[in-house]
Amino acid sequence: MTLAFIIAAVIAGILFFLWESGRDKLIDAEGRMTQLKNRIEELANDPSKAAYVKQTPLTIENQCDVVRNNGFIPLQNEEDWIGFKWQGEQYFISGNTLPGVQFYKGFSYNNDDLELLKKAADMAMEETWFGRITFSEEDNTIAFRVFAVEKSVEHFTDTFMDYMKMLNHLVECHRYFYQKLEEEHKPAALKEPQIESPCREKKMLS
Image 1: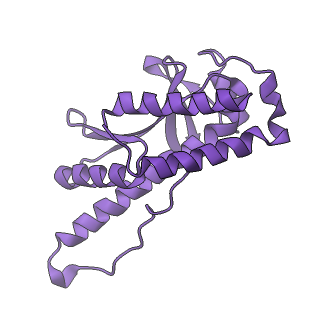
Image 2: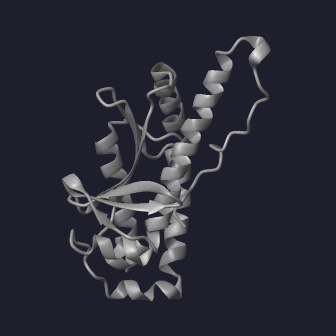
């Protein structure tokens, strides 16, 4: 894959993310774009990535190959989502939106404070700058999503776990901010020592 193609794919991914999320800016975007471009150049100059010269176009049918290439067992699910498990937890990628891909993880929040969950979601998205957190009050679920644009099996295989790490980082940041907000709402006598934030460490493509 040429450097220009890789850079174009990343820029397209960012535009796809902005369109999906409706966010009108990325925090400190210039600095992070520089980091991304540096990483892209590193990948492009890596001899081990020579396989990109002969690419296999990514299709709905061979997305499952990417999941298998990363050591997971794909499960076809309803509404064109491909499910798989990692460390005992369920994840999904969209199966019908190519070249756009969504990485998804969901939770229920039956016994949690919805107002604090939403506030923590805003804080997590503001802090991490990638991904999206949404809520469904009909079935009491919270959805975490990270977006990508991928056109080849080879490249998607190589970046798959980077997106997974980004998704989990978004979940961890939301959990941290929710626990922090809960602690702030406790009576002084019940408050516990502050926990360290995991959100300062930005998960870039690697």
